Amino acid sequence: MRNVFLVLAIWGAIHPMYYFISWFQAEGWSLLAMVDAWHVNAATSGLVWDLTIAAVTLTVWIVFEAFRTKNWLSLIAIPATFCIGVSCGLPLYLYLRDRVVYARDKRQVRV
Image (cartoon, rainbow, N blue to C red; front, side, top):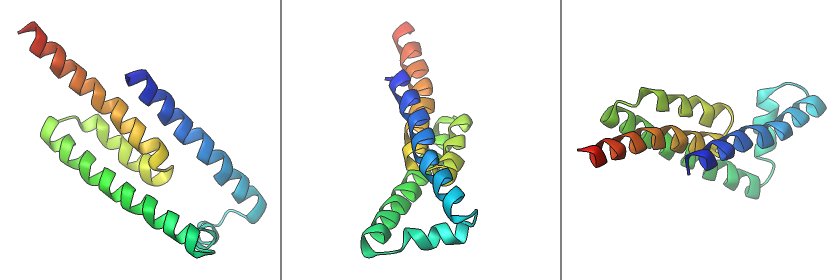
């Protein structure tokens, strides 16, 4: 599964970024204009809030797990989530988390 999570994280970074960059090239490089575009109607506003709540939930989970497991590397999924999107941040976190879980399970088998 680890490789699947990595592929999904890469896809989740590249695919949405293609659309963001295309939009910036067509409309100008203004973040405020992009935020305005996200709220052009109720459907897009609902999607923005859905993804925002998912991003905040993922962030809380990442921080809690990082302190519990001392997996500090997993914290890089937070800026990936807010700078790229949940489509990158979630699979990236699962990829980084799986490394720790797999190592812990492997140690338990050896004991």
